[in-house]
Length: 196
Length: 395
Image 1 (tube, helix red, strand yellow):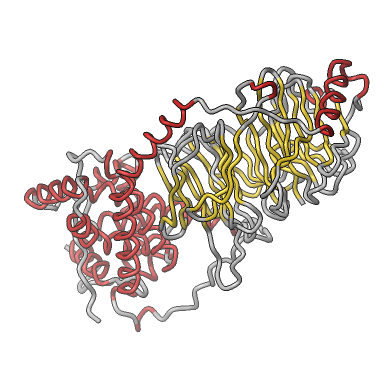
Image 2 (cartoon, rainbow over the protein chains, first blue to last red; image 1 turned 180 degrees about the horizontal axis):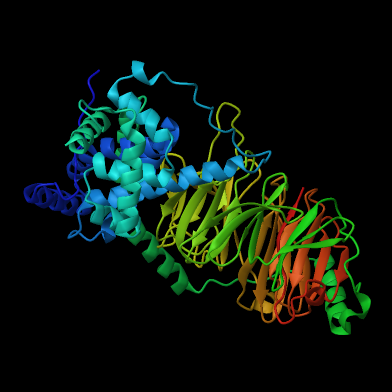
């Protein structure tokens, strides 16, 4: 099945789209089921994919995206309509995804009777045989969750480095350095024609 | 140039990435969101109704009379004498528990575990505590941090919170969830392995939430009862956010507890204790003071087998402890002190009462009212000026 596109709502989002989204949020706050369904339609896929690309665990990604939306519904009455909905949702998703990945890493360092089993170790992958999208997924595994998050926010959701710094509450220089390192890691799996 | 082309190729590749099972995941999420959104809309008028009902009850000024049984009166006289005599007739140190199990105690010096032989171990500088179901771990909080520690004090994980954590409750049975309140009202549910955390209600009440015991053999059920910001009691599936039922609370709701089978939910209000079975009220008990004085319920706890409730009512400077059952109410003991905790032993034979005004603990045998008193509780838990509080007597 052909992949469905993801709506980018970083600085690239058109002003008209932002106005449309504000009116959807306003309608949802007043109780419009249709308006919230439209917000879900616009943002679910990006939230789910962003979570998956950070955590690399399909069940956790689904949980994280669902929890972010549920949190959005429960906080809808207090949401400031002047703010765009997408960045607010993506902030929740990406930060929870980072927390989840850190926690899972920490979990490896402890053993407990009640704790869940750990994720299976990924088998060796023949990169040459993969499509670009699969190569990127595999290459992202080699990065830490914070680096994955920065790459996903910049190149999937198309936020600017300044917006990412705000979303993740980190210095812009840190965002730039993580983007640089992320691109370096991905360079080997996405060669381009001509000399490097 | 290559950099730009690589970036374009990366963006193109990222846009093609699909999460596994993406379409069915979207459909599942759509159903959850539709239900959650519908509940949000439906919740508004119910909340206003609940507030009006609560105000009406408060205005009624409900009060009733206490009819002490002869046995209850004798016990009351006995303990009143004991209390007036001071701690001479009480054991000066806690040397053992009268029943199997371990106590979890919160004091100014931290959280403690007391073994059956009376041995005390300070787990660390924590404020709130909850047992894991098998007492293998203890969930603890210290300011704006939650930790899971072993009963020897070894830290397994730490999770920061955005504000002070005031209440913790580790789920029963499978024990893979912990509910907690941040900043007094933000209700969270987290995985007990610290792998994830979610806000269930950003504006819940300060009443401690309580996990429903899971008796389903077919699937794991994770359901939590809590009171929202308006006091309405909600029972929610924490995995989907689906609301199972809501209830208007009794006046002055301050405690929630499930019975052992997860069939009945106990709501402890100022003047009424109600046992709810689903949305129905199965049974209710009014607070009764001696000599027709107004009384209020202060503490209650369901016995481990779920067949009895130990409940404390306060009236005219005295606290009366009664055993409530489906068909009867038996007055057990009256003490001239506040009671700050009531906990059943795991075998359902004894009730532990905390008496902060007397700096004593009373172990009262439920079947006949036999009392064993222990004094100097504050000094034993290094808690001068702050009465230690029992957080659980577990298995």
